[in-house]
Image (cartoon, rainbow, N blue to C red; front, side):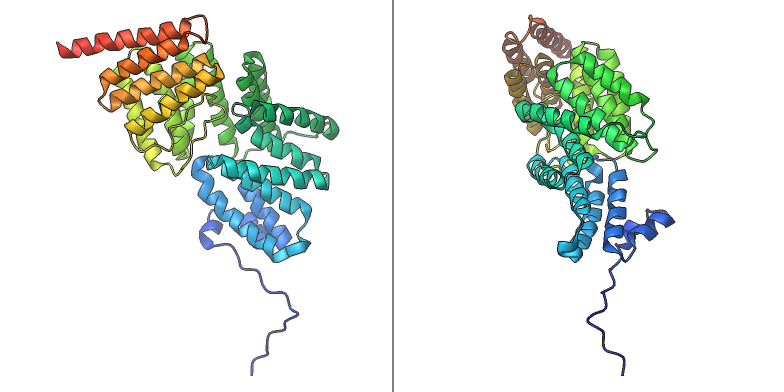
Length: 388
């Protein structure tokens, strides 16, 4: 008879699914397949950390996090603090990438509490840097508290030997924070410092490049430099498209549509609006979450058609008005006009632009209202030509 299994012998841990392993090199494959659940889980989290946090990478990040979770459950009360905290932080980052903001903030709060309890300073910095961009515009009071806490933690941590991904995350967090505060000079300095970092050559650098281009586009748009903004947006589109990041792509195309409207190129505006709808149709996001580096209170990644996009952008106009963001209102209203045109509702586009111009009068010196009236007048002339 075969020997009966010995209950005292440790059970062999199952390897991750073959489709996950197939993309790894031999050393990493061996690392994630170790029988020690602690070492294996840390190796899996290395894999997750190397994945750029685009919306398109959420399924793969989630699949690896499920494997990590299996290791953590196996360890039970013997799970080391640093492993649990790394997992919670990665869950939060993945939820932000999925545009599940509420769940992401809850996970980040849990991770931060555990990191503070364990007195892991670098882990606390990582968690705050990961969530600050998503609080900067929508929750400035909480974001301000996070910035103060972050500065205190960085002082306690002191100097480090060489730049890591954490330095890039910190720079992007500050870019989003200073953008929300309207401090263009600090945004430029952070972007310049980010460009000088000698970071490890991992796939995650693609996201750093994307977020930098999106932030640069915002900077140019707020300075009313449309041509330079369009060039930065086109580069961000290329990066997002290469990553099949359709949620990010939808918002980029919507902003380009807005720029085309302001330039009086209504054919291009409609084309970009339709490209945004096509990208949104391939995105898996269910909730709105404005891109923190693009920096405007709009998101069309969850819409199904041009009519839904118009509604989302109408809400963005109101949000921009509440925030006192004249550039945000100009972009949202111009984009709304493009989606109206894409939905064959040209007269409603004219009405929306006129109403937005009235709403903009209280936000600045009248420049935004004048710009929107100019778009409406150009569209009126365009429609008149079509009727001849």
